[in-house]
Length: 80
Image 1: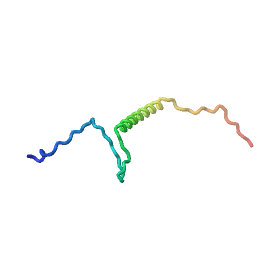
Image 2 (image 1 turned 60 degrees about the horizontal axis):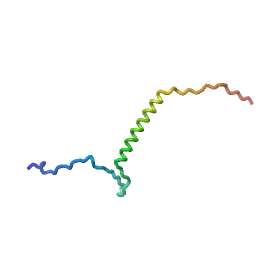
Image 3 (image 1 turned 180 degrees about the vertical axis):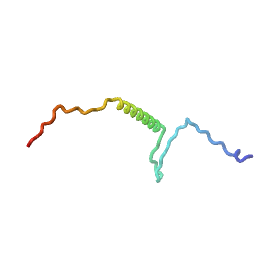
Image 4 (image 1 turned 135 degrees about the horizontal axis):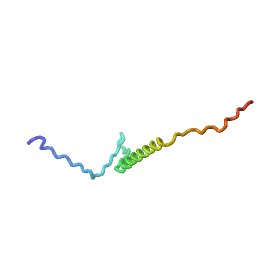
């Protein structure tokens, strides 16, 4: 018998199982918990932010340049 044949088969990864990431501090206190909904909300926020920035850049590129209005009258000089 070969030594590689005696190993136990590795467990199958079930993608339907939920997952949770728990972050602990150095004193073993729970700092935060990340659940799948957090990842989805973060992803949606990144996509919406990217779309808004693309729209903003395209709108700024096609808008006419802002020019200051020329003064209609020169201010009168004050003589003391």
